[in-house]
Image 1 (cartoon, rainbow, N blue to C red):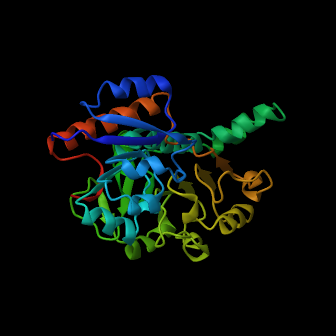
Image 2 (image 1 turned 90 degrees about the vertical axis):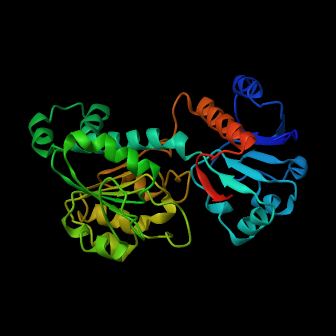
Length: 327
C-alpha cells in the first residue's frame, strides 16, 4: 500500500499509549479527535474530522460511518458491535470495499477469567462470607461450609459461544465439568458439545450453571425472559457477562426473592449504570460488578497493540484479526 492513510481516533487512550502507537503507524497519519469517548461502550459524537479519514479507530458515530465516503476501515475498541451491525453501515462499507473489525481478542481473556472468578466465588460462598465481614462480623463457619460446593463435575450451559466462551472452556478444563454450548447453528468444530437454542431449553431444568454471554441485538433483547428464566433449575446459578438487555431484570429479581434461583452473578445490567434504588442491588444472592469483566491494567496498551497489528495486516493486504464483516 503506497497511499498514506489518515487514521482518525476518538478512543480515550492515555497520552503515553498514543505516543507508543504513533511509532507503529507505518508512515500513516494519526488524527486524534477532540471529542474523545469516555467509554468504548458508547458511540462517539459527530466529528467533522472523521469525514476526511480513511480509517476510524475507536467508536465513531454510526451515521458518520455511512456518510463518510473516504472511510474504508473501522476498527472498534470494543468486542460489541451492535450499533454498527445495520443494513446502512454494511451497505456503505461494502460499496467502498470496506471492512469492520473489533477488539474481541483484547477482551476474551479478562472476561473469561471474570466468569471463572464468579463461578469459584459462588462455589466457595465468598459473597456470603464477605457480607458477614462487612456487617455482623460473626463466624458462621458451619453454615458456609455446608453451603459450599465443588465445581468438579458440575453441569454448565453457555449461551453466546464466541471467543470468551472458548477461552472459558479452556480455563474450566481442570474441573472436568459437563459443558454444553448453545448456538443458532452449531458449526461442528467447537471444542465441546453444541446444541441449538431449541435443544438448550430442554436442558435448562437439569444444569447447575447457566452462563449468558449473548451480545446485544434485536434477536437477543430480553432473551432470558420470564418464560425462559422459569425453565432454569431452581438450584442453578445464573451468570450474565454479555449484555444487560438480554435479561428480564424484573423477573430475575423476583425469582431470587422467591427462591426460584440459587444465585445470580451479573457484570452487566439494564440500565447501566444501575440506579442505586434498583431492587437488583438488594435482591438475595445477587452479586453485581459494574461492567468490569473486560477491564485490566494493560487494557489500553492491548487495544493499541491490537490495532497496530491489524494496521500492519491492512497495510500488507493480509488477513486481519477479528473481522466482523467486509473484505
